[in-house]
Amino acid sequence: KAGVTQTPRYLIKTRGQQVTLSCSPISGHRSVSWYQQTPGQGLQFLFEYFSETQRNKGNFPGRFSGRQFSNSRSEMNVSTLELGDSALYLCASSLGGGANTDTQYFGPGTRLTVL
Amino acid sequence: AQSVTQLDSQVPVFEEAPVELRCNYSSSVSVYLFWYVQYPNQGLQLLLKYLSGSTLVESINGFEAEFNKSQTSFHLRKPSVHISDTAEYFCAVTRFSGFQKLVFGTGTRLLVSP
Image (cartoon, rainbow over all chains, first blue to last red; front, side):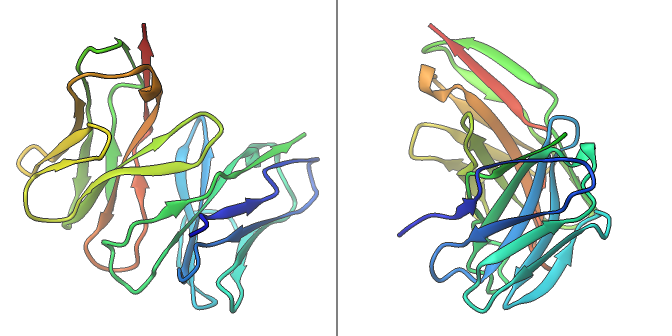
């Protein structure tokens, strides 16, 4: 079974631009979560989607948004990029049936650099 | 709210020596506990998890962790490390109920040298 895939793997943008990151979950997984990883703040939860609905949201500004499609693929968008948005963005998928015992499987991440 | 503390940011160790990576958590509700490993330029991989039952859990590559409720700890151990164990290790928790959200510690970089 293929793992979680994320595209692109690397991205360079300039301040003020917007960016869209994509995540394809493991087949059969309906929950997709996004995390931001930075050296200063570590791993922080952004949001979680299940059946095209955002179920849970972390403490990030409204510039960070996401969506999920009917095939469970998810996209994350960051508008008006700031230097501090430079990070590794990780996507994780799980079955999502509501059991917090579900294992979250992570993709390789998208490394975003904002200049 | 939950929080996770990994006091050691870096642990250097020689190959074939034992190692312990410490993890303490704080939560007002019951939690599940996880250890993830991140190799350079890769995402996170689940190493092991504690859900219930025996407080000692093991991974397929020789790591083990013990849940200690009274000390709110979930330390990770390996009796003999290999060069290939060099990576960053993250302890994480998620609460029993409500929507699943992993809360991570700041990570411990394990450096194994020959």
